[in-house]
Image (cartoon, each protein chain N blue to C red):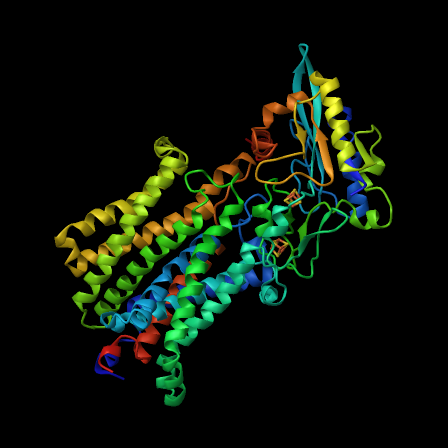
Length: 377
Length: 233
Ligand code: SF4
Ligand code: SF4
């Protein structure tokens, strides 16, 4: 263990708080598994809610940093980003594990989660999504395994995997690009139900672009956060590099969204004052417009604090976007059929549980594995 | 498919015999319901109710007239629910009905989201939940029997036994001969977001158009009112 890792305290007030959430959340998980869907507020005219929107769509988008950094380092040989490859891949791995766990919990028959692997229905987007979750989680497991293997003193195996890293990363990038877009494709089948501010034939593409945007910010976010918490020195060059990547993606996404707005429901639809238009404006201002303006100011772009703020905004904005598509954009249709949806306490608790669980998992990994001190190793 | 439905709702008298016959054949439990202003009962389809008759009122020559529409699976030619299902639990039989194999289903509920008519329903209370929807009495069809609802219908609303092409022809004939009697649309012939039906042609009452907005679901604001009432609003 490096001295920096020794200094990481296992029980800080924050961690204790997270542990309390985890214990309470475990009860909520137990309740869902024993009592079934009745513990949620999902209903016939509103079959998907908070879990799909926040944990699955949000969690997977968050994980996009993994494939972006992995392909930068292993495929494009951008050595500069090697120090953040491990935190990026680990974040992605945790994100996918949480998303997969949420799917396990959300479906009516958790014990049949393996069915898509043997009962193929290749025309189903959901089938594609399921297969991608399984394959890409495996790839991320492989990509993060060297961290664990070196701890377990399995140098030989680690060498083999590191040799294979380029093909693994290539496969992972391919899967990831397909998976991010297929999550958007899930909603192509609901043109009548999803509000026109979000529905478009290009949903798969906008999912991919926004995921890359969020992924970059997530990597930068966890790296800054851990360097603060774990007394690890931050390398400004890396962060301004990530910020430059963010500027390009955010600007591209902004143009795409404006184009979709103008060719779709028209600009006026965003300003009608309805709940949907407010959510749309919130998503666009928090996640796209404000971060872009901030990043264009050199004072912000060149300070860790400024970049950190932008990261939070973009992550929040993309999560709002996913929630808008999975929940808010469908509420109007459900309302027309007399249905309202607000998650139950149990649903909210499970979501908090997963966030806390992910954070603690990351912290443990940083303390016991060589996640952040990779550059020195 | 030789045998399909031609459902002419202007012949319906609202007896709900089809609802009862459907429950009996499928051995579905009764719903606990309470009277609603429009008398539709149960107000919506659910896992125990595969079909229901929508009651609604319209004005005809200055008089109040009570009219009906029927809800249920259309057994689409290219069903969204089938293309959504990741494990082919829902599938289209060669006879036409879209049916469900419970033992494959993982309960992801994508079919519910995908169906443009919100037809597949879920057993929310169950710990081993199934998707439930009309099967067009597939097992009766295989047995050369008439679907339970058609067998029961006393008013000749549900006509069964002709090919879909013949039914379409007949529907067009009725529409052109009696334009005032019907809402000018053949339900199930073509529909946005979903393909035409393989098995069901519906003709509706003219008063129906108040509640149908283009290609959106046919019950829209009507259900909102009913639900508001059901909630005590
Ligand atoms: S009406 Fe809905 S449930 Fe029935 S076949 Fe069509 S898509 Fe499937
Ligand atoms: S809930 Fe069952 S039937 Fe419906 S899409 Fe999922 S696996 Fe298929």
